[in-house]
Length: 491
Ligand code: HEC
Ligand code: HEC
Ligand code: HEC
Ligand code: HEC
Ligand code: HEC
Image (cartoon, rainbow, N blue to C red):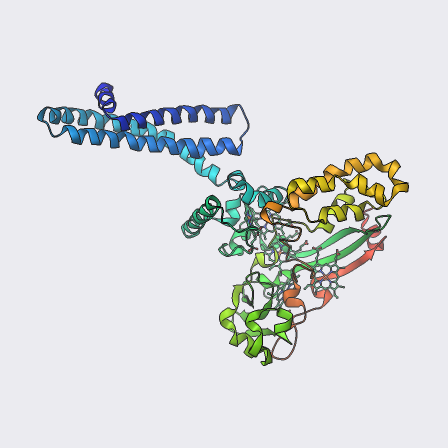
């Protein structure tokens, strides 16, 4: 049996060990209370998590290291005199026994706390809140998305040691960036070291889950007095399996397993696509290259000057070293599966469509749009600017104002919240900083039309399909009362 006294005696002779012991006792004591509290009394909160599962355990481990270090130093010092030598041997035996027993106890505690720590560090709260200002935009919109139940690490790290190390190294570099305050604002996108998306998304989405047709009803409001509502309705052809091969035709054809679709762009955003290659399983290759006066339409310095006289094939070869190659996967279209930063018109339309903002208020769409899209230097400035809605209304539409004053006051906080969700002046995130790559071209991305815009042609001069019906059947376009909607019984 071990005796605790010699251990304590030895511990007491070293200041370093005493410090270690104090650290361990305090940290473990406080942590046990905090964890019990978190488990049984108050709700989990990311800040408590950081203290309970990162800070205190770190402190305890540090203390545990200090104790033997201090003891060793004392023993080494005392080994020089003969009496000390005897004491050392006796004590060393006891100390060894005690440390073994304590280690067993510690092992149990640490296994539990450690397990919860890892669990916690993989949670969305940890990622979203620890680097609060940096991640807050991504975290805020993520919480509102369909994937709010999916942990950040499921998409950004995923299983497998290789990706884990890669992401931890990357995380360390990013943490350094945050501490040194030299990270990029806004955080750059696309993310270059993500795992191939098939593995990430495929874990939950089977091929069957994204085939067939989807009717999509988009409700729009115009910026006129009546906030006129119109509908655009498309039946999206997500994919039909082919009879013989079971491969999908339609929108999800790009990801079929029996081919590889690669594309080359002149920019990191993968916006200016100049070359697309389709490699079939049997080795057959189809190539489309950018046509016409590339240097103008691309606006890229690498391709200007002497290259502009060359044919498109020569051009892409000549500047191959500047081009960025990419194997197309899910996130080339689904770049916003969870960090959904809506454009201002869509964000407003949604609020009008679900009645959060009353579309009966004349001119509300137009004025709201004007106020939320104004440029503000800070959040406070934005909140104050938007609060001027009633005054602005009075200025513009004096005759209608009196009856609406109250309703307008109610709209102010709704617009303020909307702005706070999507715009982050301190991170240089404005409306449309992170546009979705799904759909028709806008001022911010050509989306599908990076390739389907008619500029990329194959050797026979045939362009990548531009046919409306390849992607969808248009059931209504900007119609106020589309017949199809009545047929669907949606109104
Ligand atoms: C469903 C998968 C998924 C989840 C869950 C997810 N992300 Fe992302 N994230 C993405 C994709 C996809 C991109 C964009 C990749 C691209 O375009 O290359 C991205 C991009 C980012 C970026 C770069 C800036 C941007 O918006 O493009 C940051 C920062 C980020 N995510 C943080 C987080 C944090 C923090 C969480 C958890 C709160 C999280 N992500 C959860 C898929 C996910
Ligand atoms: C851990 C599981 C999981 C992972 C990983 C995951 N998803 Fe999802 N996804 C879901 C669930 C569950 C839903 C349905 C949510 C709902 O209907 O509320 C969904 C819905 C969707 C939707 C339809 C709703 C929408 O937001 O448009 C799309 C598109 C989608 N996921 C794409 C992706 C892509 C792309 C990836 C990879 C970057 C991915 N998902 C990764 C579980 C996952
Ligand atoms: C990187 C280039 C690229 C991007 C981006 C891209 N496509 Fe394609 N797409 C192709 C190529 C190449 C083909 C095959 C050539 C063809 O069908 O003309 C194709 C074919 C298709 C087809 C026909 C598939 C079939 O069954 O034959 C559809 C539908 C389609 N794309 C829809 C879309 C949609 C919708 C988007 C955006 C969400 C998109 N594509 C984005 C390159 C691209
Ligand atoms: C060429 C572009 C493109 C690629 C690549 C692509 N998708 Fe899609 N996907 C779309 C479009 C467009 C939609 C319909 C979006 C909408 O409803 O607005 C869609 C819809 C979906 C949906 C929702 C289906 C539903 O029920 O509404 C899921 C899930 C999905 N995709 C998963 C994936 C996964 C997983 C991958 C990669 C294996 C992938 N997609 C690759 C364009 C693409
Ligand atoms: C490369 C594929 C592709 C082609 C080609 C294409 N579209 Fe689309 N279209 C889309 C996608 C993707 C959406 C987005 C659906 C969504 O998520 O709202 C869309 C949306 C629409 C909408 C609804 C827009 C809204 O405001 O709500 C209309 C209308 C439309 N397309 C008409 C057309 C017409 C007309 C053509 C032919 C001249 C065409 N599209 C060609 C892919 C395509």
